[in-house]
Image 1 (cartoon, one colour):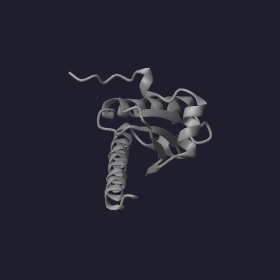
Image 2 (image 1 turned 180 degrees about the horizontal axis):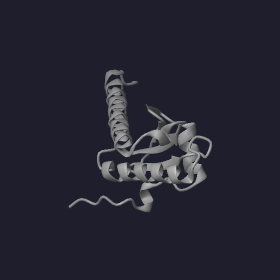
Image 3 (image 1 turned 90 degrees about the vertical axis):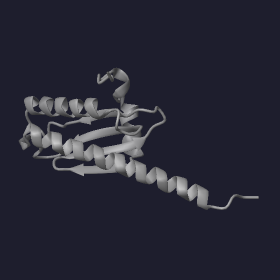
Length: 135
């Protein structure tokens, strides 16, 4: 049985880690009401941070529900996700989505992220092998 917990090492914990993702975001995944910024890490596993502002999601009940659903989605998909640091940001109107719609949305975002990372890594590998070596 595989571990599906959400331990501390799967989270972005301080402002510096968030800042690094904002400054070096190699991937931007848009969804309805959500935006995920991601940058590669060397840890071998994904880490996630959440930014749900009061400006975009007014009620604390709604912010907490959204954060809970995103954490649950990451917890279940952590073994399929590439080694990236992810910051999930809210947009206006996201609190109007029901839980099923949000789950489908997040699942699609994780699949797109996985595909984009895979595409970039294969492009980088093919570029390295096709370039002539210096003599």
